Amino acid sequence: MEMAESASLIRRESARRYVNGRREGWGVVLLYPDRLASVKTRAELWGCLLGPAVMVAAGWPVTATLGAFHAFIGVLLGSTIGRFIDRRRAARKMAAGGAGATIIPLDAIGSMRTDRTTRWSGQFAVETLVVTTADGTEYGFCGRIGSLQTEIAGTLAGLGREVRATPLGLAVTPQAVSSGA
Amino acid sequence: MTDRSKPIRSESTWFRVNGARSGKGVVLLYPDRLVSVRIYAEYACWFLMMVVLDIVAYHIFRDIAGWLAPAFGVLLGSLIGRPVDRWLAARMVAGGRGKAASIPLDLIASLRTDRSAVLAGLSFTETVVVTMADGTEYGFLGRNGSLQADIASALAELGRDVRATPLGLAVLPQAVGNGA
Image 1 (cartoon, each protein chain N blue to C red):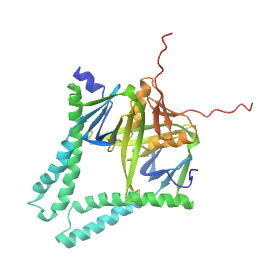
Image 2: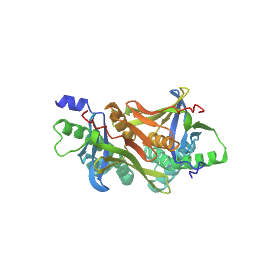
Image 3: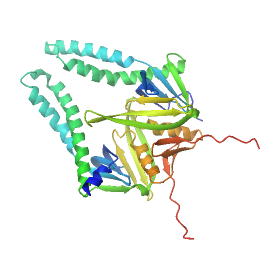
Image 4: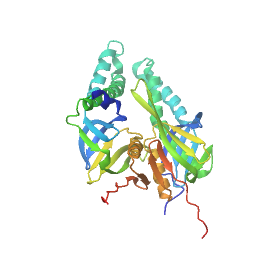
């Protein structure tokens, strides 16, 4: 069962999660063939905190004056390694039953869009993938999620759902309900 | 009315044409076309920042900071160089200067993103691949984020039918009027 769960994982990304615009903490979003799962994890945060401490401590005897440089590199390395650990732990947590995880069945998705917030006169952008379910709930995933939106759309298409591009994002055509005739 | 002279989005990227490398620059998405501009200001920023940081490191620490100054030079150079690249590219397109290649959105047949893992899965690179009606594939490698979805939205704005498939996004051919 555990093997099947991890084998079917299509993609996992570190992201900050929002529900209806409200921040819900750090974690990992995982895409499976039939659902999206969001698992809370904290290794990246710990990496950001511990990375600089480890780097400064390791470099202190040699380059005492370069503390700030080392701290910055520590943040970069710590967050990269933490993100990697987060993604692995989240997949294992889901394989073990996914206790505490938020599950969004792909069948319940009504539309998707990516909100871009620009900083410094538009030179830097932060992207949030917003998944709106049929009941109107908006799940936001903020981070370096890249092509996750189109990957979810591809998975939905694989399930036989019709997903069309609109000027505002991707819309999932509601499933036809059989009349029983 | 949409301003067709202003880019909707611009991204620093490496270009590929039919899988072969074709330089570095900026891809700009306009309401009716994609424009790729070859530009290398980022490399100039790398060099400049490496020199500046070496000088700073020498004056503050009385020592050239070994590998740290070049490493930070590249990091800072990228941070500064990419926005400079994008700004310059938009101006070059507006002024009709430079090495720019235009891809009309009307000729796009499909879009997909190829992902490959680097450093044993620590990180990933993504290439947005735009396939034209004549089969030519234009690849844009870099942190393009939701560029693929933005191109799809621009196509939808033009009235084109773009649908998701398990392999990416397919642009349905335009219906040809029968003249009736």
